[in-house]
Each structure stands twice: as structure tokens, then as C-alpha cells.
Amino acid sequence: MKTLTLAVLAILIAGRAFCYTADSVVVAEKKHSPVKLSLRLHSRGLFSYGGRLVTSNPVVDFTLNYTGKNWGIQFFKAVDVADHHTPINFTLAVVNRPFHLGKRLTITPAMGVLLEQYESLADQGSDAAMMITTSYRISTSLSIEHTSLAGNLVLEPSLRDWINRIRLMYSHRHMDVTLFGWHNNGLFDGNAYVAAGASVFISRLKLTGPLTAQVGITGLWMAAASDEQTRKGASGVFATLGFALN
Image (cartoon, rainbow, N blue to C red):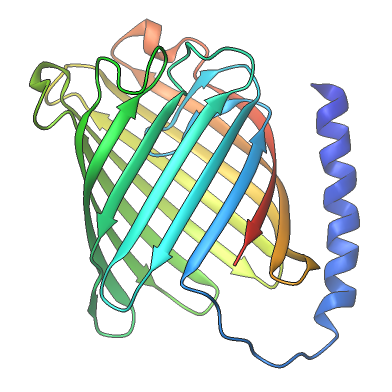
């Protein structure tokens, strides 16, 4: 882990030096495709909507986003590289519809499925899921976002859960800094917890054509939990290397 952390820090420093050079060149603005693909490798597995580290093994995830004029699609798949039976092996697929209230405020409801895949294509716990994301753009580089996720809505109501996540995001040139907060209110399953986190990334590093790279570090702290098993092993630091095609 120390070796991985030192390697990531070295890449961060090199990436930052590259940023100053790249940013000094003025290029013509290009139109972006409505489809974005991303592939990331993490040294540990975090369920980003839930705010818990659920495996200490390396994890690979793939995301496909389609952003249309009036609606969008998100497909997300995560795989534990070392153990296909851990909870991080899942798929989330949703359709969303953004509603713009002025130039700064956007409310985006999304509906779809979350498939638990630690044994097969759809294991126990796979069910319909709903998200409502409210985002407010404070400035060109700073925004705040709240997401409410409710799972197990139809097939297994006994496993129903409700998690809230808030993010404060700063983005400037190639630097992305995010502060996180999560709250599972325990309304349905009685399992309540509060977690906080932060991440620092060097992003949008141009490789070739539409292909870009990012590298960063994320830290998570499980502040309180009603179940000691939930809190155990749920805090830590991990590194990420990612690639995006847009």
C-alpha cells in the first residue's frame, strides 16, 4: 500500500506539472459527444452512493453515460478483481430526466435497477432503485449536490434502504477536489450510520484524441454507526487510476 501511495503521489506531481504546460496552450472549443465511457482501477472498493468501503481488494469499474437534451442513461458495473463474492460486485442501471430551474439549480430524478452480483447475474437484494439528485452551481468552479438513493423498492421490501449523500465539488483546469458526507437514516432497516470523506484528483489529462486520464486519492471516515459490523473496516484511504473516452 505504501508503494502504491508513493507511486500515485509521484503521478500527481508529474500530472500537475503537465497541467501548467497544457493550460498555457489555447485550443479551439470542441463539441462533446453525448456518450461518455470511463474505466477506473481502485486499490480498494467504495460504494460511492453509500459511503462505505466494502472490500480491501482492488476493484475495477466501468461507466457508460448518455446525456441527451431531455433525458439520460447511466450504466455502472463494478468488479472485485480478487474475489467475485464481495458486495462490491454489482450493476446499477438507471434512466434519468433533468429539470433545470434557472441557470444554477437542477433536479434530476432517476429510476432503474441495482443488481447484486456476488454469485450470479441477479442475486438476493437485486431490485428496483430510485435516485433524486439536486445540484446547485455556486460558480463556474464550485458546486454542491445532494443525492437521495432508495433501494429494494419492489421485490424485497424487507431489505429497503435509504441513503443520502452530499458533495461539495471544486473543479479548476485539471484539479478536482471533493468533500463528501453520507447519512443512512435507518428508517427502513434500522442500520443507521454517518460517514465523511474527501478526494483529490488530477483529471482531464489528454492522452490522444478523445481519451483522457485521471489519478487521485480518496479518504473515507465512518464517523458513527448503529451496528458495529457496519463500522468495522469501513474507513480508509485508496488510490484511483482512470481513463475516459468522450
